[in-house]
Length: 602
Image 1: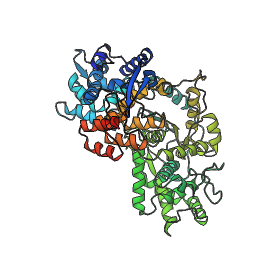
Image 2: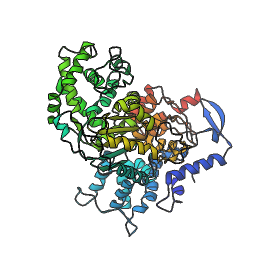
Image 3: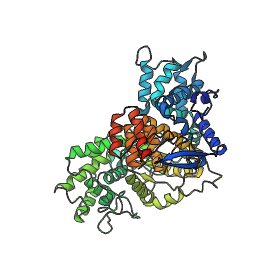
Image 4: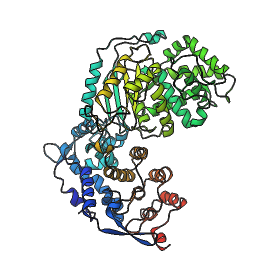
């Protein structure tokens, strides 16, 4: 049935709600590539060539490759057959209607928050609209109506329900996190920062942890809704934004790239430049470089909006009383500012009032507030290479994130950075409010908040929790994963072992416009140009789905061939004409795309 493109026949063999449909497809594809080795004739630019099927990438994407049914078959596969098999476990006792509460709970078990996650907004709105009043979620819905509500978000929902997110066994993972969190709770050493009277008033018993993965799985415990000022954390935001707005080379004309070995507010330079962007000297210099042509209010508004984008529009506020308090106790800050101006460290293109405005801006940037939840999303945006996992918004360039994580690796936790790298082995940044942000690239971001600080001005509980975290999980950068038998690797196994599942999801994501998945696969080095069993590529599927942004992404970012020919001698341009996607036709022709008939006759 699979070789004939009969998806309904394949799916009809799935009789239980717990069947992992995507995994079944990939296993079927892997079996077919092992059993069938006869040569397949393909035409490429007028020449007949012979290939064994094992020479192609082992994917089940061929199941998506019928050009005459590209739109309907893929849509049916996502919104009809797959839906039914995945939704059986959410049926009511009458085995006819779907329980919306069971469905939402099923997503929550996988770490998703459908009622607050912006990726589910359209789906939730459709479910509400199907109810009696249009404003509340109905208790149950007919299967066909429910499937229609999910159709626009089926790829991501399928990934979640099939356990195909970055951490599949979310419940087991978070149980271990809770154990570590509670193990650190009894720690009472250290004291709250008293740099200003406002900071000294903070409750020392505040304690929270929040985690957000690159797939948007969320976990929180403790005082995760208590806001704290970002203070030192503003430097990682300033650095990535400055590198994105200007360039890495431009920024490092003003700032060095080395750890200083001294405290974060030390009055020290190297070669008349701050040692690195994470020191106070580096933060002030960065503040002078970011949007210098705008007025004060516009510069602050710009930075505040970028903070909100980093956090997926989670809570970001401003503490005016703290800003006033910081200004009243800013002698050292102004001393560093005058020292930087004396050494010509500020933006040379700025006006003469640069010092005063830079000081004011930096104080206001430091008084911006986040919750532990919001900071974990910010960290996850860094883990995703600058792509917010909740909104899918490209906040900063991947190169800027890579350089920022390098700086966090070597100097993110003040004069404890070397020991932290040795024991924990992860990029991190602390602040004097007691927050500690940790990034595991391509996996997750984490924030621990506890105001009691050690002598290095790092959270006592935060540092200890990170040590226990890498003691339990294979997340230290230099852990030998194949021999760390006493540690847990919570990532999905195909994250590093197989390509077939990734290629199937790639085709799904291209057809449905899932940019979060596409950007993650780009960072992982997946070849976007590999054909499936029928010679269909991600570009073919993106064109069939009418996904203009995906087509641009594949051509301009992934540099795929614009003229791949499938087994029916069709190119993406043929598909664009077939489904009348005019904007895509114009784009493809501008990029040199041709129809299959022209290529075959050339």
